[in-house]
Length: 120
Image (spheres, rainbow, N blue to C red):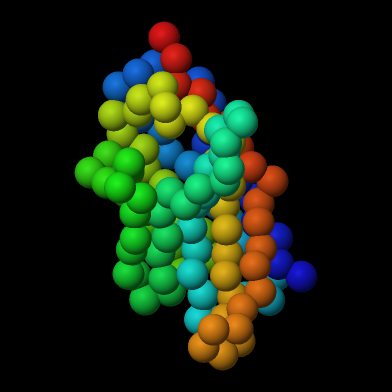
């Protein structure tokens, strides 16, 4: 069983920065994609950023140029550096791991979520 443990959320003023971390444990396929999603009150969960085990990244347009996703494969950990935060970034941020068994077939794992609040 795979477990994802997130850390690093909190309260920050507009324009500030936060760094989220997510450590994965358990039996993890070497072919995987890790990422961050977020859900604001009353809204659907949306993709923030993803990174493959090979290091290819993908970002939502709303965070491009402000957020940076990275990973340490040796530690099975993914990070999200969030700069120039805006009130509209306020949400619960969820770590996600897609472990591929073969192309197109994967298991989906989620962390418990960490709250990010951007407010003055």
